[in-house]
Length: 169
Ligand SMILES: [Zn+2]
Image (cartoon, rainbow, N blue to C red; front, side, top):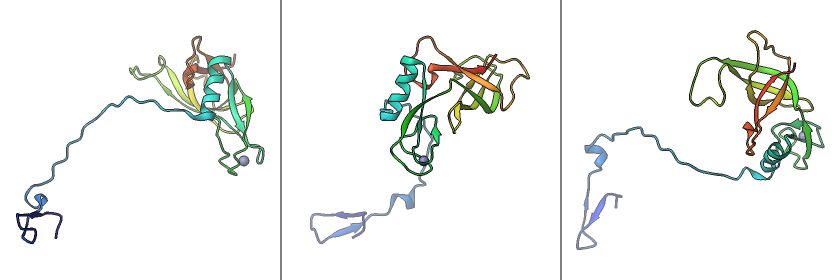
């Protein structure tokens, strides 16, 4: 019996129904839903964000096997899968590895333009942190230059507790 068979009074008596797809073109419309949600950032994420909020300290995790320091911190080493990671404070200054500058207004921008999206390798870290760069003069930015974190006065325990990075004076 097909999925579309319909039972009548007599259980032995069935009538095949045509698939609706044979008679009607399936129409698909695009929509958009907005769903507020919260999630736990995990043990490693909690320690990292609480340190930013309460002490203005940027923490990474160091693998005791390969000695690589990850920022943001990882619960396990991405190189050798060691799970015995150790906390290590890094920064608050480091090297500008890469950047792109935004000069236009947009409501979703976290800070006023001009600013940049940047990858910053903090002192003591082996990986780059994606963040914002601002407070720079035109033509001032160069890959490899020194930059430092500028913390917000009122911090909430998220990555924007670092307001942005700026060139070291
Ligand atoms: Zn490792």
